[in-house]
Length: 212
Length: 108
Image 1 (cartoon, rainbow over the protein chains, first blue to last red):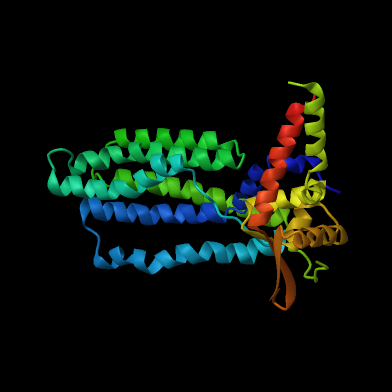
Image 2: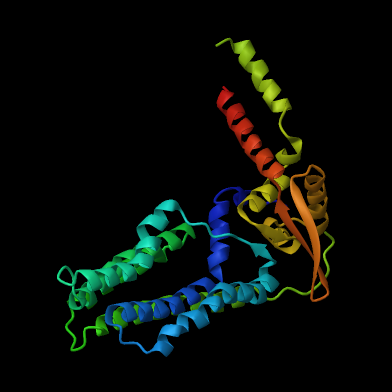
């Protein structure tokens, strides 16, 4: 029997299926830690070459592991489906490109015009900037998937970013650590919780041949 | 506008509807596949609630019309049928949507 409600909000349903297992969220949480490291290398240049090389070692994993996990965990439960998560142009312009280019811009400013913005100012205010950017990312992702948690995540991201910027620390880098580690833990834990719920909700289907 | 011409035009549009797409189950299948790069038989069966036989029958019709591609592969010795919508299928879905919108707008 065809379920009539399937005709409405079908795209939202598919997006929800894509995010429901929490795997992409968990990888996002881990990615924020690597991003934080990269940012600190740019701002402070104090990381060892070993730490700097970690991106080359782990980057292929980010391209391969999520898909491998989906095949191992999701497909035996839901069936196989391949969904290309396409981002709107506005999402690219307002969130992805700024997040990608902020480290480069910081590097250029510090190198060529340190009077404009110095390390201390960047380390102080970047949590606020990222708080706003990540709020947009969370809102867009979760809203499209039909989750009401988008408001909570966005509010947390903005408010935590601002709070961290106003806190005083002996070492300025602490603000960056605090912000990114907190956001990473939030996103990773949310993904892990979603994964556990998903595994309980969808048992592995019996392996049998199709008549298709 | 001449009312009798409008009725005849609407009638022609209704009779020209693509009957392969018009069937609710097939419309739902094409709608799902239009949002996905590909999906397997089991996924579509779970999502649509169709029985195996019913789903198989509809997929055969869609494949016959050239609206979907069907490929079979083996995963851990279990056969898996992968389905994806073709360009012809996307075009048929789009035309169906436009026709239906036009028909519904011209109804009294």
